[in-house]
Amino acid sequence: MKRVLALLLMFNVSSVFAENIIIAIVNNSAITYKSLEASLLNATSKVDKVDIINQRIAEVLQIEKAKEFLLEASQNDVNLALLEISKSNNISLEQLKAYPEFLSLKDEVLEKISILNLQRYVTKDVTIDENNVINICAKKSTSTIKQIKIAQIIISKVEDLNDQDTAIKRFLKKLSKHISKGASFEGFAKLHSQHSSYLNGGTTDWIEVDNPTVAMLDSLKDNEVSKIYLTDFGFAIGIKLEERFVSSSLKQCTEKLIYLKAEKFYSNWVSGLQEQAYIKIYHDAL
Image 1 (spheres, rainbow, N blue to C red):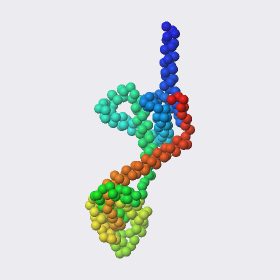
Image 2 (tube, one colour; image 1 turned 60 degrees about the horizontal axis):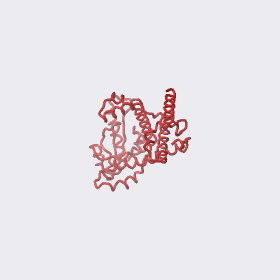
Image 3 (tube, rainbow, N blue to C red; image 1 turned 90 degrees about the horizontal axis):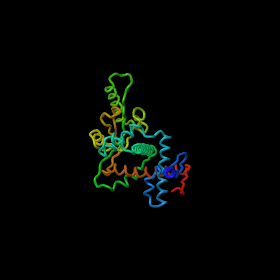
Image 4 (cartoon, rainbow, N blue to C red; image 1 turned 180 degrees about the vertical axis):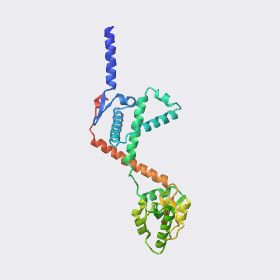
């Protein structure tokens, strides 16, 4: 009887050891068989198993960077994600927490949100050339929308006066009168505008003509100064610089192009992490 118990004990210990055997090292982190067991059991070849391990290696490196950049998911973000998971499965959060693998699920959610935060951080400055957008996206729709580019002088505050609105409007009327007589709008914008666009003479990005204020600016003649209008940053005067007609699906098309470029940029960035990291895969353990 004792011999049988000893054999059973040896079998159980061996099983636990096999499940927790280290199959890869990434910098200072170990990847165990147990952590990837479900995926590895479904793999049909050793090549597939190595691909699964490499994918986990990439995730570990991204999580390391997320921690380094202080981008790890907050507890609130994790809780909100878990609440959404419970709702999508038509169960309460308490029922989800009773799930035997809840702790593993919670860890997975934390990792995925952390990696998403890292992706956003790394790709935040990815842009695409405007001319390429027009060339690629203009053919994707037969309907068009009108956009204009304007220059603005925006004033949010005038010193030492109680009736700010009246004082600001009076000041803008004075500037408008000078511009109408030949003064440089760009020069006045650089000198007086209290918006960050003053750096480039008050010039904006392309604006869709989709509200009364923009329509008013669109109706301006060459070098004509607009009436005073209200913006989110203060009162303003403006002039119309350019106009164009673009595809109505331009925004969606642009977002897709930026997404594809960001996806490629991030993939290359992660590959760079792998090249710089210490990685060892124990192929004999697979």
